[in-house]
Length: 480
Image (cartoon, rainbow, N blue to C red):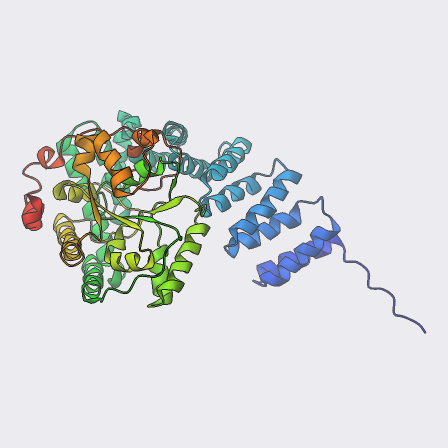
């Protein structure tokens, strides 16, 4: 009996060509299969695993991408794109040490790669290596192309590092800019003036930046305009007030999270940094995990709890230490948090209302916070948030523990001891007093500030006296 001749093994170059064609046509499964076969034929060739990594990145499978990229740089240590993409994958997974290492290796191969340098500086800043990040920005600022972007980033990270020539360039660019392009330039110039104590110039630049950002929001999608965003918040707050407290879930041995809620620029990052210095605590920053879990599972709080904990693990929680979730908007749902985690600690970070509002005015947020680019809008948002917190205080006393920023500044050692032991029920650890030395990623706008010891600054209410009367009037009784 005759048999058909065996099908010849495909040629490597033919496989790679076929895979590239499938990728270009959007047939990613076919492309991945062809690249897998190519890798089987030539395991020492870096091209197939690199292409598999690119597909994984495109599909958001960052862990898988890291696996392939590590294989690539093992086979071809001088592969710039593999090192850069390895950093990007680690960044997406919030593995900041790995991201910084990969971006640094890529930059060593191609020192003029501006995108890689910006990514490296971002990772370094999040890791608390502020001076190293600032030096990367200074090097970028010496190049014509990325100069302005680097000066903006440097001003936000370390405004004293921007020299007179850099400030002049920022201000000149701001005079030429229109629309939302003006906002980052104006905020950067404001930060430089602010750090130097030039109060008039700082306020004028902040005002220009806020006006530009708000104008861009007003010209954008209707549902992201300040009034619409405030209306959405008000509706959510009404729902929260009307909600009947759900019964607590069984929670004898489960995790005991620490939640920090409040208003942006209320000192919440400082509270988290103090707690994260404790060996039994892991700070996770701001996540959207709780809201997403509740949206997905509705009244099934047990399923929501499991989904939330799974999301924390994907965000890097080790599953052992007490997680700190600093998602400020969770003040909309402390009753649900208490039901999901009956032993959880919910901390409400509180700072002087005027200083909180002006802290928002001084901040160009990366995203969201659409109601925080006008002094009266900020006052409206503040009153709405405090009104809901006052509701919880009146109807669910003891639900949240208030942490006053003023006390942390006035008597830091006593306040920190109280926060750690009394508020959170942790054994005392002196590392919490040296919170600014804690080696951990911090992604918030206060990343550089919490790397320093607590200090008292001159209030902006005094620095900008006469300029913020409208804010103070709009805050009403909260202004004091």
